[in-house]
Amino acid sequence: MNTSTVHAPIAPTAPTALTMRRGDPPVEAAIGGTRHAGTPEVVLDVRGLSVSYGDRVAVRGVDLRIARNQVTAVIGPSGCGKSTFLRSLNRMNDLVPACRVDGSVTFHGIDLYDPGVDPVEVRRRIGMVFQKPNPFPKSIYRNVAYGLKLAGIRDDLDGRVERALRQAGLWDEVAHRLGASALSLSGGQQQRLCIARALAVEPEVLLMDEPCSALDPIATAHIEELMSELARRLTIVIVTHNMQQAARASDRTAFFTTEVGADGLRTGVLVEVDATDHVFGNPADERTMHYVTGRFG
Ligand SMILES: Nc1ncnc2c1ncn2[C@@H]1O[C@H](COP(=O)(O)OP(=O)(O)OP(=O)(O)O)[C@@H](O)[C@H]1O
Ligand SMILES: [Mg+2]
Image: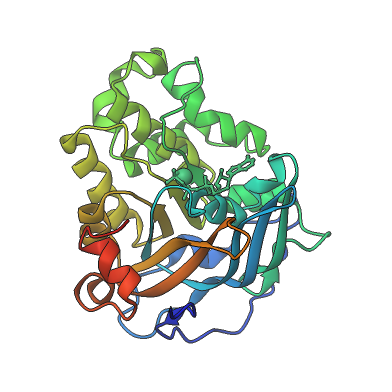
């Protein structure tokens, strides 16, 4: 069986002078970026990444480049390490006990795991939205303002909250009741609120772990439209179990699967990453073919 990863090339770019220490100004390029027609710029460069929980390796040997202003979908069977991989992109795994990350993840050429890098700042620049909408039991306004206050941003809170809610496509539905509890919103609205909360601190990258799995088709369509809108300025990595969603909403797709070692232990590996059309229409690896055509397992 072919166990090597198939890659379509993305040309790396020169690192910027970015450092990731608390209090740095945001990356200017993050805010004014546009979708490139030519070769995309690499924002996150993952090399030889392995993540373990205790002595169990959950995912190993991942080499993957995430291109700017693109939506990258991460697909694969349950337990193959998609969430583990995603969390390693903004050091969210630091918060998981006994989790160890080997290999490197660089963000504009800066090693995210360098001891001098502030993980809180990393998570501000590389935001995350989870599977289940998780608004705080506070008002709609305070949910969005939360991250801003945490980041010490105090100027123009009203303007920032409004902008984030507009970007998340929620403003028109909540403008008249910003003081109402976030828990009074529908599931789809709550998820867009969580997206607004993540956007308020102006991240450059948004990681989304199955953001639509608790939503109905209309709310899902809304989030997909939003992703394509957001990708004009941001870079998005989305984990999804929904093949149609990956095919519709992403530019590139990474397929992960689980390999069973001689010791019987299961480890996640990246099989293939390429333009989404390719992965779905003409994948290079037959495991990908089986998965995307529903013949997995
Ligand atoms: N906090 C944790 N502690 C120990 N093991 C974990 C932890 N989180 C995940 N794992 C293990 O790591 C492996 C990969 O899990 P992960 O959640 O990344 O998979 P996934 O591809 O996101 O699955 P799903 O599609 O079901 O969400 C699994 O074997 C899982 O049991
Ligand atoms: Mg998961």
